[in-house]
Amino acid sequence: MTALPSSLGAVDPTSDRAVFRQIADQLREAIDRGRFAEGEKLPSEAELVEHYGVSRMTVRNSFSMLQGEGLVRAEHGKGVFVRTRPPVRRLASDRFARRHREQGKSAFLVEADAAGGYPQVDSLEVKEEKATRDISTRLGGSVRRVLVRRRRYLLDGRPVEFATSYLPLDIARGTRIAEPNPGPGGIYARLEELGHRLDHFDEEIRARMPTPTEVKTLQLASGVPVIHLIRTAYDTEKRAVEVCDTVMAADAYVLSYRLPAT
Amino acid sequence: MTALPSSLGAVDPTSDRAVFRQIADQLREAIDRGRFAEGEKLPSEAELVEHYGVSRMTVRNSFSMLQGEGLVRAEHGKGVFVRTRPPVRRLASDRFARRHREQGKSAFLVEADAAGGYPQVDSLEVKEEKATRDISTRLGGSVRRVLVRRRRYLLDGRPVEFATSYLPLDIARGTRIAEPNPGPGGIYARLEELGHRLDHFDEEIRARMPTPTEVKTLQLASGVPVIHLIRTAYDTEKRAVEVCDTVMAADAYVLSYRLPAT
DNA sequence: CTCGCCCACTTGTCTAGATATCTAAAGGAG
DNA sequence: CTCCTTTAGATATCTAGACAAGTGGGCGAG
Image (tube, rainbow over all chains, first blue to last red; front, side, top):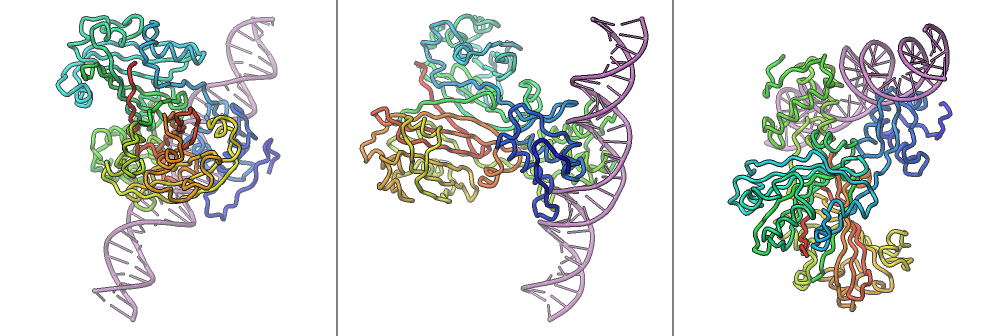
């Protein structure tokens, strides 16, 4: 029973609750109560082994619980730290409003400015592909090949969002939309110039754990889910002119919508 | 190298990638390819130990990775199974439309009917409490005490959502809203009868891993995040008349919004 | 003083067990 | 036939230790 800086309690080996859960409970509560501040290092495995008189695997099991809950982050060779919350991006439902496009800014830049962060876009890829069944359905059902635009957004150097846009070839081929940089106001501005006046967007939102690919692309810590948003843009002719599939680091986003009560 | 039903490959102990990751990769790919169907049992730990020639902890480590990704679910004494996706509830942005209230149905029942499931509401609790700073701010800043309505929603017997509504006392006290069953059309219908004609709702959406309490309340499997939705209802006088804090099992929901392009 | 090596400390990975508990099916008592 | 017990097989928990690998500070060579 060494004197740990936080003076954690003891565990009851005869309890129904597994020892590693009891240890996790105590650490969780200490974090919640602020005994360990954001970014602060927790006691090392060796210290907890000695304090609780348990095996190292038991302590590691506790840490892995807390990691799964997104409470802590382990750094090889350094220690286990209380996770810090990154600055969040607030996505308002008016982010695609025409008035923003007319100022020549893309939705991402508008948001980043508001949040005061430093925005970047990378891994830009533009090409033609065969549409999946799902994308084809969302685009109206008769679309076979599509123009695909992939890009990753970073805020203050940290990747936060990975987006893929799909557009019917008869609309996008040979236009500025098929170029890496579509120009001021983004592809929505170009669509309107091409005569597709936008009417509304449908957004579908899911949340789930990331795939290993997404963990790499978004550099996600364990215990951080992703928000999966699929947006379909419709023009005033009721035609679906774009599907945008977006995967966002859930700890970096708050989505915000306004619904009429009528 | 026993003949496993799925004939998984071998691992390379000299590889940079940890053995338990390689095993997890192979199982993940087998699941993705449909070699193991939804709900199907994976090979037991003992079988994989023999197949790969590794220790049991290594296999368990692989399983725990897949569990964290929400891909599989372990059942004590039975085995490890590919997770089945529950029926999802699609929450449309018109779910609070007046026309639904006027039919005397609450939003949850309207949705459940559409999905063909069997809806239930339980752990109903109605009482007065001191407002937290956050709730007070959302209700306009000057509210000290609030009426609190807590309830849990179940679909086909499975808990899917836990919601807490906060209403200013000067609006709700002594009305039908303060009773466990607020009557046809729910509390929004009562608010309108009380002269608070609803104008719009603001919704804030986050996704994160559940707290231990939420895991219990929603009976969440590991690797399932929650969607945290905070809705504020405004009447035509621009007054916030209700804040509803909702935690949903993310694997049971798809949220859907329609945004005007203007 | 600076650079590079070494060392202490940390987490990551893996082994080889032991015991507990849960499940489901088989078998025996009534 | 029904009900209880047994048993095999499954996961859950825990121990004790080993080696690998990343981090950062100290120290000695130059």
